[in-house]
Image (cartoon, rainbow, N blue to C red; front, top):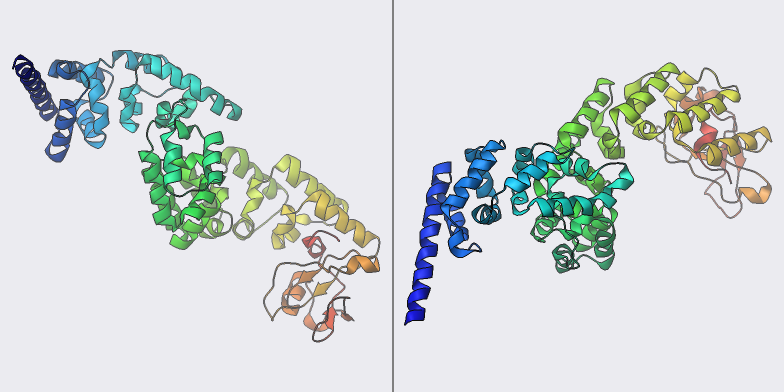
Length: 463
């Protein structure tokens, strides 16, 4: 009987403490279903009677002094009830001081607002988390603090052997390659719970229309995606869809999943606005080379645009819409050497020529441009095969049997109309002949136009 009475007394004390906590939660603005959930969690909090209203009042006061107002804290607790128990058992003062003293971190209130579960840490756990992150970010010449400033949830990653995230990947049917990639390359594998990964992967599967196999390929190509919140994923998807449509946005994210981690306001939108100011069709860029939007304005886009302007390239809107990958090329190590080589061949002025055929600048200098120029200098053939209907063109192809005749052929496949437009010929003036390659039996002899455009021969690797 004494034991039963003691148990009843303890339970009653816990309920009284929970009731006191409830009144504090009401005072700061928690209402409705959120209040019920938080009160239930307070009743189950570790420490029993120590989960007191006094401890919560002190925690609220310290957070308020750090810039996190009580009404804002109420919204965070409603969003993430698991952040409440630590406020009932110990003061956040040590954590707030450690956050404040760590160079490179935003204000503590800002970090906690972004990730309320940071309240589950103390100063010791915070330092351990920063030490754990350092090796993962040092390769990118960034500090752990800089990384945390962009992804506060990273402070929750841990180095224990058990990994709920990896178990979640297996439960969702992702193959072992995806699991191994996440295990090796993403510290997000050490999140204390797999719930976030499940939400993110469920969002990806539902929004991008991916089954388990396709989802596994996406995760294997970009493991950090498992640590991104659905809201972050949805923001990138919504922006790309607004620029190019739903189908193009889905295709771009499947091809370049790293775009899911790029900030819309800090990166994607400013880049899109800059390209639009040049007359570039941003929707077309998303459809053909969406990763362009992840390029740095100062390090990539503006230097490349300045270089092309100096060299006389015109119609930037058309040029960069058709070849957005130009913007990812280094002016010093890629564009300038190609420009100098083409100029050494006597092609001048290059600006107008490359305005008409900018794709030549995306080709390899050593694998395409030099060998083709050598083949032409040695008198070997460069053929145009008009194998497409009038007004259309297809990707250039190579004659596989050319080497047996000692030729080096850069063969382009296009219509007569398209070819003559490229080389500035009238249709009636085009030179022609016939060829029947060995191992190929066309329905009729295919006409050859042996006078190539100034830049057309460089359209493929030489045989």
